[in-house]
Length: 421
Ligand SMILES: [Zn+2]
Image (tube, protein in one colour):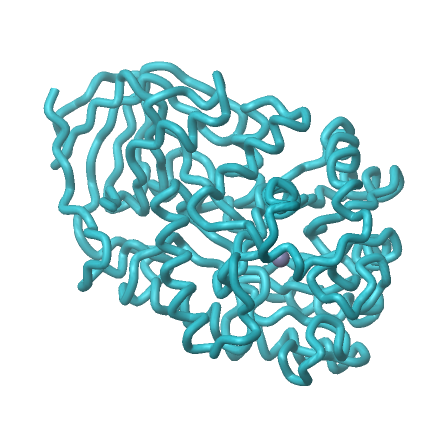
């Protein structure tokens, strides 16, 4: 049958409809209603179904059944030879960064402009939601708001704003990060982000970082009290807290403080894993940041910004152990870091499979689990009645080979709108 297309969004085009984005998360301004028939449907929560009819009304999935196409909708799409799954959710990126340059040398305005391009690249590769886990100033909020207002096209953006750190904990330039000292100061910083900027989540620096040469990645930074104050404020607003940590002590502090998502987390102990499993907490191992980078070591270039500390070497055994123990693991590429680009975000899932996950588990990490890590699973991350129609259509089934997400992507649908590159 002929596939009818909705008017698409042309690359670089203007006048984009606001319903593409989070602003119209709750409502769709114009008709984005259609039906499709999927040969294979991966729901995102571990199920796969064959020969399924889906109806979408105003950007929301309104019916799922075993019927053929009904011809009752404005548009009909026959994907009987294809696989339909939820759009990917990459819950940890740095939209402002250029993976091949030094962002500290560039103005905030320049970084925001580049952020819009990074967002677009991610969308075109099948990512329908992004989490920005730490920018400077208002850069990431500006990108989010530009997307929301239809100034530029991009995935739904969930933004933490500036990362909260100890004084000098990340940058040696005073004021480059949201620096706090003491629980009151941390609480105020969290309130500023949540109240003034409507931050979608809070990002904390519980240890030093391999990308901040003057810090020790294994050294703890924010205290339990400081982080606990931030957790209280975020949780009061129904939002989650992501904690950047490499070293064991930083992970312990984060868990004691009440953080919801452990980011990187290379030194998980059995006790950490046990606690996280019992409390439904999430690990975001950011494999693409480490593997993508290692792929380029020895070629010269941007990896000089990174200090090797043995953290990389711990990534694989740590991931395998966490996965084996049944920890909830979510996609987060850290895209923007050196040699970690936008536009191949799906590689994160390929590394997960390489290191022991089944393709179905990896798909769930990149959909439902990532949605949970941003507390948006009621709206996105799975295919079900009442969920937003954020979908991708693949020529080949990723359950046969996870690389089929990257290799056979045919359509990206955001909020019921087919995106045209
Ligand atoms: Zn990061």
